Image (tube, rainbow, N blue to C red):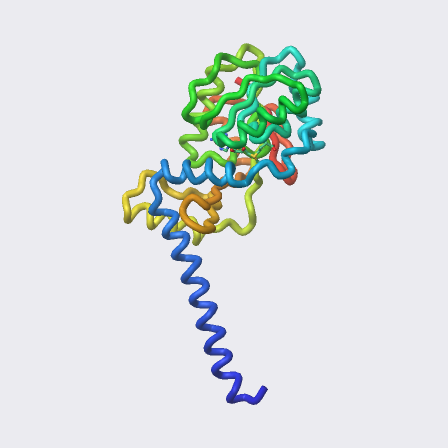
Length: 259
Ligand SMILES: C[S@@+](CC[C@H](N)C(=O)[O-])C[C@H]1O[C@@H](n2cnc3c(N)ncnc32)[C@H](O)[C@@H]1O
């Protein structure tokens, strides 16, 4: 390409990059203007929209098999939080565990009912967000299924959830949690923009370090997750008065907490 022809290309390419960054920044700002109730609606909607997919395969992943074999007893009464379309619920029932399911996404719960029928299995299923539902009694073990804990926005709410399940834990009970490990480098600018918009519009939540929020389509297309460093996770457990007795730091963070 001749030298004079490169100039408009370089200019327009640069302008495109600036517009792209401005577009991304305005999405982070837009997310910050949402109310917490809208964010929660979007989270439930995103899981409902995801549909069953591979959840039709009712088997436990190797890290789940190892964790459950080590920390669950067949006599335990277990609540699987984030039981979704039934993958791990069916997997646990097939191994003989006494499990009940809870999920915020009603279509996923309906699908898990269908999965149970197909497998000729039975389990109590509850619909609602763990932070909002009245827990159906006390349990020997709570499992936060496949990173479900990472989908609860706001540190104070997550600590409140841990305190809530702790209060319903039978003596000798355990809380099994998996989480999404922190990314490097963290998205500091995205967090700051979202927090700034929340502050200006007096929204009732603030983006926190570790939050990753991705938007596609309208506001209900938002995907939220919170990513943890191992020490962030242990601090949250400690804030709820729980002790970490096992902590595996793999592609999925997995931990067991006790009172
Ligand atoms: C990664 S999926 C796991 C689904 C299924 N248990 C599996 O492992 O295939 C996470 C699930 O957590 C549920 N979830 C997210 N936030 C929740 C909350 N606050 N309370 C209850 N369930 C929640 C979602 O609806 C979704 O079904």
